[in-house]
Image (cartoon, rainbow, N blue to C red):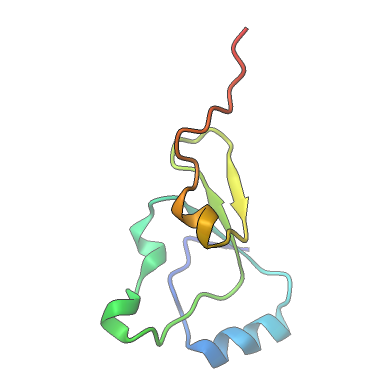
Length: 86
């Protein structure tokens, strides 16, 4: 497990890391800017994350996304009611 990890290597590093440590989870808080560094636009997309993303929702409601796809990333946790009121 890694917590709040920024992009640490290039695509070759990420592939090698996945081969050597296949069951790695990269835990991130939704909206944490540190986990987006370095920004792809400023570095030409040279850096890549290693491990499977596990995104914790910003509202601390217990929602998580494991390995979110593009659609889930764009619409994650928006206006989703998870609490049951009695």
